[in-house]
Amino acid sequence: MHCLLLLGIGTISFAYADLLVDLPDGTILGREIKSGVYSYYAYRGIPYATPPLGNFRFQAPIPNKPWEGTLEATEHRSCCIAMTIFTELTKQSEDCLFLNVYTPARKITEKLPVMFWIHGGGFKAGCGNDDLYDPYALTNEDVIVITINYRLGIFGFLSTEDNVILGNAGLKDQLLAMKWTQKNIEFFGGDPKKVTIFGESAGGMSVGAHIVSEKSSGLYRAAICQSGCSLTKTSFTSQSNPRKAAYEIARAIDLMISEHNTTIEIRDFFLNQSANVLTEAFNVNSESGPVIEVEHKDAYMSQLSYDLVKRGNINRVPLIIGTTSEESVTVLRMIPGILALFSLGYDMNPRIIIPPNLKPKPGTNLDLLASKIKSVYAGNGTFLGNTSTFIEYASDTLFMRSTIKQVELQSKYTPVYFYEFSYFGAVSHGIVEGVGKVGHGEDVYYLFNTTGHELTTRGEFLIRRKMARLWTNFAKTLNPTPNPADSLLKVRWPRVSRLNMPYLDIGEAIQVKYGKKKKEMAMWNEVYYVYGQQPFDGF
Ligand SMILES: *[C@@H]1O[C@H](CO)[C@@H](O)[C@H](O)[C@H]1NC(C)=O
Ligand SMILES: *[C@@H]1O[C@H](CO)[C@@H](O)[C@H](O)[C@H]1NC(C)=O
Ligand SMILES: *[C@@H]1O[C@H](CO)[C@@H](O)[C@H](O)[C@H]1NC(C)=O
Ligand SMILES: *[C@@H]1O[C@H](CO)[C@@H](O)[C@H](O)[C@H]1NC(C)=O
Ligand SMILES: *[C@@H]1O[C@H](CO)[C@@H](O)[C@H](O)[C@H]1NC(C)=O
Image 1 (tube, rainbow, N blue to C red):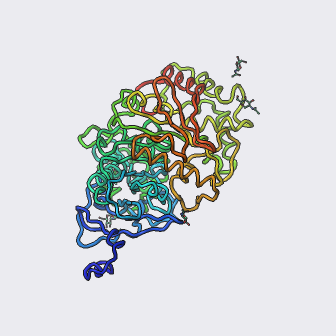
Image 2: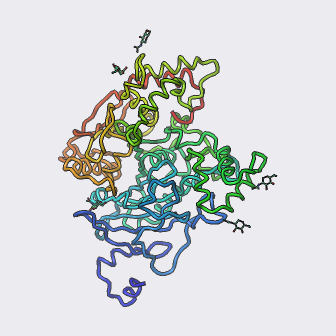
Image 3: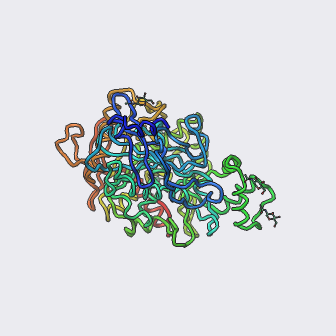
């Protein structure tokens, strides 16, 4: 209200005028944010879709409607309802399809590259807000950053595997936000032809989904997958049986529901429940994530990813892809005793080491197959008592194997820059015995300033500057190290070639290395190609 009045009498300052942006749908007002000695302009909580409420629940999103007057985009709006991980920080609602735009704190006259961030959280948690993703290190390198909310858990990924509840609503939200970016970002000074999509964990897997979905074609010109990409399918970020899960969730609310009920009855039943009841019931199901939709013209994803990447049937844009040096330690150090428990479990039931998505050929000797996998990590010994071997196995099987496979397959078609993040900072919260120390998610604390994970040491802040430089160089020029004379980076990061697979080790020193996981990948290749049944979904 206040600002409208000011506008009316024409007394606003220039800085204030810079914060007003006229979009095709209406005018918005942002604000300047101070982050330490840095600052940027923030336009928070911009609606990009009609609220997905009532009968729109579970459906693909519909573009937002224009508004009258000036929309104050100075504070965040609600995060999407999720599991409880971040609840203390955020207000959650089903009405959550908002995005945030961050620009350098000045009047922008040239067209800046745009970095479009998709947050992680296992497709069931997380939010795009700047208490988690303060982008100052990126805007300080003169790019525009967009962060988004997309529907999570039951609201974003429920599917009855028919045309009643199609699934992938959360990915379709991301897609709509990417279309919003094409239509609107020039009014903030951004270049719609220079959009890089990037994300971590489920966000990286989302980027991977946009790489293989033709629906995302032309909406970006570069991609960055951090700890998850097209071929990463963990048991908690993909769905083994979405339709069965939908029925189980319904039964968690009403015991009378059975497989005799139709999917239309199930949908109508869900439409009549409160968001809280649904969220609670969803907890019976640990799985959430992308599904293969029945064939229809708006299907976001109707084919398995592996063959698409192998045949180069993808959006052929340059890719940065990598993992942290020991992905699994994040989980294993969170819960005391869990490491020993897992190690013992795998020692006692050796066959659980066989990846669920492998689908071994009939007649395969499963015990032999299991020992083939285990022996690469633990020799003839046990995991229990030699836990670093279990940690390495778990890191490989969750994120590393699929990442290296994507590097190998996709580099035949597009430039691919492969990295490993191994910088062990004070923000790492101690270690458990392991090979590479640096766990899942730690790379994100360097790109973004995250409440509760603030950097403190000089070394950490230096890594933040270097990472921001590499990532924004890529957004600007499609090459993370275009200038060999750059005194901050002092490195040239070569792309993967037919002959070898270099990777950039982002650690205490930033240097190029070769031969990542040779022995382990030789084993996994044999396991998948000799014993597995195609078509694969992930790897
Ligand atoms: C980072 O975030 C913290 C709060 O979480 C804030 O105190 C600090 O100013 C922010 N910016 C920088 C550059 O550290
Ligand atoms: C499920 O099917 C039963 C038997 O046809 C019916 O009585 C019940 O109303 C159905 N439940 C819902 C939620 O539609
Ligand atoms: C469910 O349906 C009943 C009967 O039509 C209605 O009274 C109730 O408000 C509905 N609840 C929700 C959460 O939509
Ligand atoms: C495991 O034991 C078998 C039989 O004792 C031996 O042939 C094999 O080399 C051992 N493997 C490793 C990795 O130590
Ligand atoms: C742990 O396993 C590795 C790999 O097989 C082996 O080389 C090492 O000797 C083992 N360490 C212990 C303490 O058993």
